[in-house]
Length: 402
Image (tube, rainbow, N blue to C red; front, top):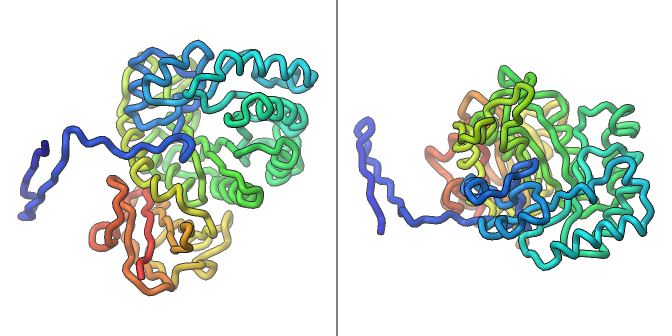
């Protein structure tokens, strides 16, 4: 049963039709990961709210909490002290590693809510050989599940943290040594005053290139709270972090953190220190649901190029490098270029401004009608009129039909 809401704004009659029983399309984590980063309480109310916020992974949970994860419609990454790979654990024998891995697998092997197993956050390259032994043990024991390792961002200290000559070397060593099934890294770059930390796009570009070279996906961990000198979460900021990740071809996004830590100066997380939803929760829900809506189209695409308009220091390629576009009108834009299985040209155009909406116009080299993937329904429809205005931080998937 549908309700019709009609109103008049500045003399224009608007009709919005919606259904109370409408349920948006949901992506599985196998298609695209959307995760609150951190350990997750597993009471039913908390898990249902995580699902309602648009996540498909619950975060990190213990082996005894998986039934509640499944009941909430989620999957999770198993977190257990016996399988965390600190520096000492990276030096354990293969026999001891296999014993620990098999012990956890015996407890979880038959649970469909297990997406993977947590190993390590932000390792230096010195322990990559040890992480390889752990990853191989998981592959032998449960090849259908992933071993979760998250890497440093580009602004980490080379000597003290990366233990590599530079960031590209760090990533290359990781992939060649550990041979992971995906790359995950974190980058917190939205700063107070709507400024962007230098290196954000360099980080995306370097990870993208190495992921494509090795035919593996990558995930980005971004901010959903404020602390230190980081910006307070906002609709433009959360959109910016999602759509820039998509423009570079990312296959997953995690948010640090969903729950506000009860120490330090953390603030404006989706769930505050008293367990209450904040305005950030509702903004993040909207952004996550946009990902679900566009995801059925996005997950079928392969990244083939990225450029900025105008070009910038961290990405010197401008529209002259475009595979698909002959013209582009608008300022401070990011464009990711993609192809589907039929080699149909797609782009994701992102308004990089966090304060100003941007009118965008463009033309494809191939002649035809330009269509968009609607950010809220996932439907393909002609791109025209008001849809050419892109909100601060937001992106639009466009393609051409001959």
